[in-house]
Amino acid sequence: MDLNLQNIIAYHPAREQDEVFALKNVSFQVKAGEHIAIIGPSGSGKTTLLQIIAAAMKPASGVVSLGKINPWSISGGALRQLRQRLFYAPQIPPLPPRQRVVTSLSASRLGEMGFGKSILNLIYPQYSQDAFNTLSLFDLSEKLWSRVDRLSGGERQRVGLAKILMSRANLWLVDEPLSALDPKRSRQAIQMLIAEANKRGVTLIVTLHQVDVATKEFPRVIGLHAGKLEFDLPSADITKHILQNLYAQSEHEITQLEAHVFSAE
Ligand SMILES: Nc1ncnc2c1ncn2[C@@H]1O[C@H](COP(=O)(O)OP(=O)(O)OP(=O)(O)O)[C@@H](O)[C@H]1O
Image (cartoon, rainbow, N blue to C red; front, side, top):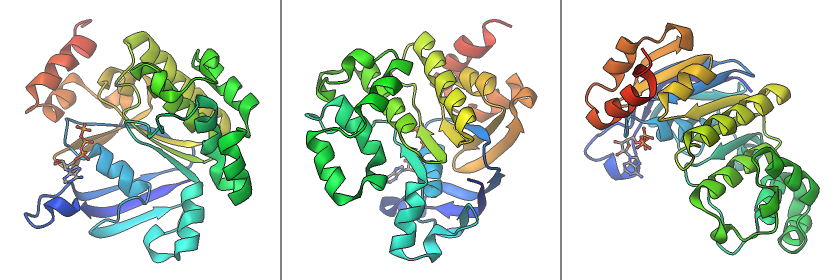
């Protein structure tokens, strides 16, 4: 699915009165099948941007088009259909505590199940073989029948990634998928996500705090700072100087940056 964002301004309702912008005049285009990483310091607007693209949040002004459709100018029914074509994976996957992993993974296809099948899915998960195969990609197949509240943080995060792969959406919007994973697992998980997106021609947009992963694994990187688009560049053109500017006021994050990216120089 291709995307077009034009002059997006967004406030969170709680901040509207003091006019603190979450996004200021953000514009960019994405072609179907592109893979993009969004980076920037904490609070720079990465999650808000994904929510705007996912049509989960309405911009205060500006235009969003998802595959040429403005989600805010169509009927409720058409909007629900449009949302089925995208998968928004929040930073902390919403996994109902007592649910089994297999049920949660099958639920990624609720949109195509219809009411009867989706109720049945709670008792007899509808896609257990697919769920098993998808979990194997993240070394988690033995957890197929486990309850999600008995998983570690990293395992839950990998279940969240497997849920994305279970969906049949053609736009994946993934918010900080690696925060609970160690560096080796992070690299494996992101490479799996990218390989599957490639195979299926899916448009992939991922927010990341790991700038090294962003610049090494993604061909295009967007930098946000205080709600503004600071740069939108091929990753090969991103220099140490550009990254230092982006994280200039975020001392803690720059320390991480140096550890991850610059120590090898
Ligand atoms: N629910 C909310 N209510 C009010 N303000 C919010 C809300 N969510 C985010 N904000 C504000 O909007 C701005 C952008 O936040 P956002 O979560 O998009 O940033 P982020 O780059 O994803 O941050 P992080 O890397 O810490 O997840 C920040 O100033 C934040 O304080």
